[in-house]
Length: 265
Ligand SMILES: Cc1cc2nc3c(=O)[nH]c(=O)nc-3n(C[C@H](O)[C@H](O)[C@H](O)COP(=O)(O)OP(=O)(O)OC[C@H]3O[C@@H](n4cnc5c(N)ncnc54)[C@H](O)[C@@H]3O)c2cc1C
Image (cartoon, rainbow, N blue to C red):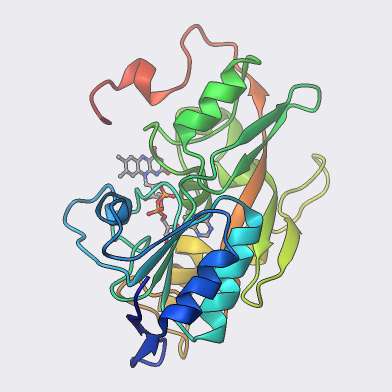
């Protein structure tokens, strides 16, 4: 891979030498895409076709270690970062111009615990992935209406769907999150009350993540963010979430496919 010009968080451009990029690549299990890579064009595209941003590099993370490596690399080089989950965020914060895009869309594993009625999903899973696994056990949780929407982005923004009137928002059913913090380490955040009497703050503990981060940054003086930029010095990437599932007793499965055909490819 040849040298790359890449944007930094202080508004300047820096040049990453070929050897630096190769060292970065060698520490990844997933792919590192530059604009000349055959998968670059398809990977940078998101649901909103009006967003046409071109990252300098895209890390297609294969697992947690890749996310940690990518966040550390971004911090060390002070890079503009965007994090992609399901890629359905309308303003396009999942992709940045000239920076480092951390793409989680290949991290889709979902593991259901039918005894405790919970499901643990990776940060790139969509509601289609999630529902596919939980419905095999007759379980469901509050989630999105459309299958390709990412569970991470949707839940971090609250998340409303078919079951919300009975079971609350998607974020109300979030039990815990593994987070890669800005220093490249993994943290475990327990987000929700464990019993009906215990209350835990859902949003404040995750206030550095995703759309919530951007909302807070917009409303807080002195830490503004715009144009799809995420500050890599704030907590950054949720790799997996554990969600409470409930037994689905309806006659129709609560997926978008069942009730809203034609919304997705
Ligand atoms: C067709 C369509 C249908 C929709 N239906 C619903 C609905 O039924 N209910 C509802 O509540 N909303 C719905 N939405 C809105 C949707 O929930 C939000 O746009 C949400 O942000 C999309 O999340 P994503 O992961 O798919 O998108 P992305 O664009 O990948 O991410 C959105 C934001 O979350 C951040 N993010 C994503 N994953 C992570 C992660 N793992 N760690 C840290 N940050 C992350 C990104 O950086 C970005 O800022 C819909 C949107 C579309 C386009």
